[in-house]
Length: 390
Image 1 (cartoon, one colour):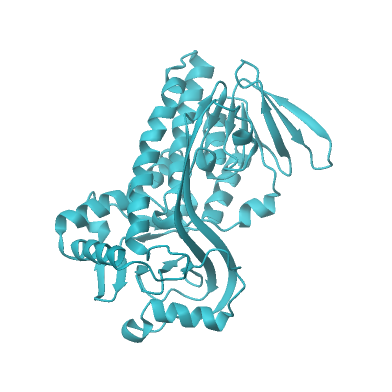
Image 2 (tube, helix red, strand yellow):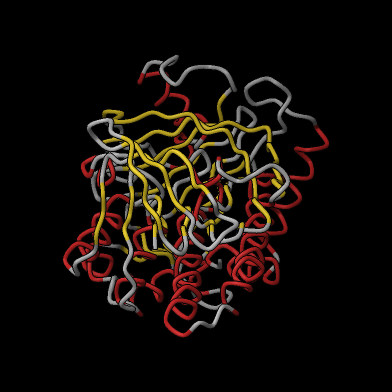
């Protein structure tokens, strides 16, 4: 078994296959240091915690993660909080930076005897429509190599070799651009509120997400095409203050900006998630806008489903799970896409090519949605169930 990519999907899949006695190797194009330090999402859903618990992978999460069950909306009509952890199915997130989770998973995989090749770039997956697919790679010293297995799992992202190797017409790609761009910021500053903060402002969205006691993630709705370094730190903090209405609700804790990144809020889905002996999981299977923090949670769920199906196929010759894998995962993916789209429309001004702005009609609809979320218990229950669900 060949697994491409050492993110959450690839590592969970590798751990579960290794535990089932299935010989597998992970091929990762980046270095170990890069894999363990690249910052990504930090919200893990209750189902994700249960998956990690079920397989003995949640030790770091329970030691260092923090439970979180409240979000705060700041609007022109004031602010309100939703204790979503007490609504719906009473599910809470764990706040746990993804680089910490990846480090935990990598340690588990290697300690259990798993094989991984870092700085080994997968170039293409060949003969996936047969029974002996192989992966061509470039080794760290530049030498070409070929790896052969019964199945290949593509967990190497939307630009990885797995997606690139799909022949024309083999799958359908569904792509949507929400027309919104974020400037993502990682600040060396303690959280400024004890909740996820969603600020809706005429100048555009601003978001506050705690990561650790000393580091906070912020987002600003951003004009597409403007580079991340176009504004000074002072200007960024002043804009965050304005959009989050710090004058009304309390100052933000300021600090050095450790990281800046541009995120276009786009989504796409590959359908089906299988071509012959090649299976897709994680960002290779689908990409979601980050407005609802679903990506890593879907990746881990898909890895568990795929691991069970591959184990049945390779140990008992039962391929029913592999035949059902795509449909089973796509049901979760489309549910996540629907809620992510709803959140994106709720939080942002209409895209009209300018920062902020947007039509009166769009703004009035957004204001109505927020009023319903503020006052309707049924709406709040629906939000809570979908906010934590995958």
